[in-house]
Image (cartoon, rainbow, N blue to C red; front, side):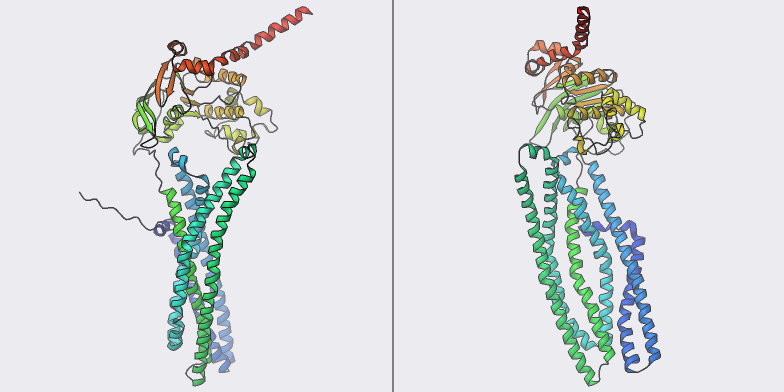
Length: 607
C-alpha cells in the first residue's frame, strides 16, 4: 500500500497559526490600514488642487477649503495610523506571549532524554531573541506588508492617471531598487541565522560561567573564562558588523537611485510645463507620489528581511516545539489511585541508544512497606533504576508495575504524585524557605510545613534564621550547606505524602550525626511506605528489607545485610572498603548520650 507523505508547511505559514486566535483584532488592524492608506493617497491630490485652483487660479475661498481638507486628512491619517500601529503591536506582543508559553509548557513535557542533551543557553536564546524576531515580523512584516501593498498599488494607479509619461519614467527605476532590496535581504538572512545561533552560544557560555563560579574561582580560571567569553562575543560582533556593513552599503545606494529618479522626473515635468502639457500642481503631486512610492519599494527590502529573520527564528523555535518526548502518555491513560506500594520490575532493560545499554534483565519485587537499598559502584545503574519508576525515562524492554498496573497505562501526573523523590542533586528555588518546602503542595498549612520540617530535622535551623520560614533562599540554595539542602528536599517530599519514596543518595552530603538524626525521624515516616534508597550509609543498608547489589547494569547479588556478608561477594567488598568504618562512628553517636550521663555521674561522685 502506498503511503502519502505530507509535505511540511513552510515555517512562516506555521507561525501564522499563532495569529489566528486574534482574527478580530487583525481585521480591525486591516481596517485601520485601509483608512490610513486612503488618507495618505488623498494628500497629493489636495496639494495639486491647492496649487492649481487656489494659488495659480487665485480662488482664495477654495484655497481655505483645501487647507481645511489637508488638516482633516492629516488628523484622519494620524488616527488610523495610531490604530494600525497600536493593534499591530498588540497582536505581535500577544503572539510573542503565546509562543513563549508554548515553548515553556512544551519544555515541561519533554523527558529527561531531551534535557540531557539540550543546551540551556540555546533554549533561552530561542525563548527570547528568536521570539522577538517573530514579534517584529508580525508587527512590521505581516501588518505592514498589507499597508505597503495598498500604498504601492494606489500610488502606481494615481501616477498613471496623473501623467503616464512621468509614471513610466518613474517605474524605470523600480527594478533596480527592488533588486537591491531583495539581494540585500537574501544576503542578510544567513547572517541573521548565524547571529541568532551565536547569541545562544554566548548565553550558554555566560550561564555556565555564572552557575560554575565556585569551580572557576577554585581553579583560578577567571582569565580562561574571560577569553572564552570574549571569543564568543567577538564572533557575534563580527557577524553583527557584517550585517550592518551590508546595510551601510545598500541603503545609500537605494537613496541615490531615488534621487536620480526625482531629478529625472522633475526635469521632464518642467519641460512639459514649459510646453503646456502639464500643470505646476500636477508636477507637485507627482513629486509627492514619487516620495510615497519610495517608501513601499524600499520597505519591501525590510519586510523581506523581517520574513527572513522570522523564518530563521521560526526554524529554531520549532526545533523545540516539534521535539517529541521519549516518554509519551498513552491515550486513555487512567489515574493511579489508592496506591498500596507494590512495585515490580519485570525483566527490565534500558538503553539511551542502540549502542549504550545501561540496565539489563532487572527483576525487583518490592512489597508494600519494604525498604529496598541499591548499592554498586558508580555507573552501575542505581540512579537509572529509580528514574524509571516515575517515567523520567521509559524502559527499553520489560515493564514496571505498581500494584499490578503497568506504569505506562496511567497518567504521568498521577504516577508522579504517588512517588516522592529526594534527588541526588538537590535543587532549591529562589524563594522563601516556606515556598521551597511547600513546592509540591502549595495549599499546605503552616502547621503541616512545620511538621515535615521537624521530621526532616530542619525546623530548628529555620527558626534560628532572622526571618524564619520567610527567609529567602538564594539561587539554587547555594547559601545553605549540602545537608541543609538535603533536609529541605526531604521535607518537601514528605509533605506530598507519597506511598512510594525514593531517596537518591539523599544522605550523602550530611555528617554522621546529622544523618543519625534524620534516620530517626524517617524511620517512623517510612512505615507503610515502599522506599527505594540509593544507599551510601551502613545504617540504611542494615535497615533494608532487600539489598540489591548492581554491577554493569545487572543485579549481581540480592538479600539482607547478614546474608550478603556471608556470601563474600561484591557486597562484602563494598562493606569492607566503604561501610565498615561507619559502624564505629554510628556506635559513638548512638552511645554518646549514655557516655555523657555516665561521665556526669562520675564527676558528681568525685565532688
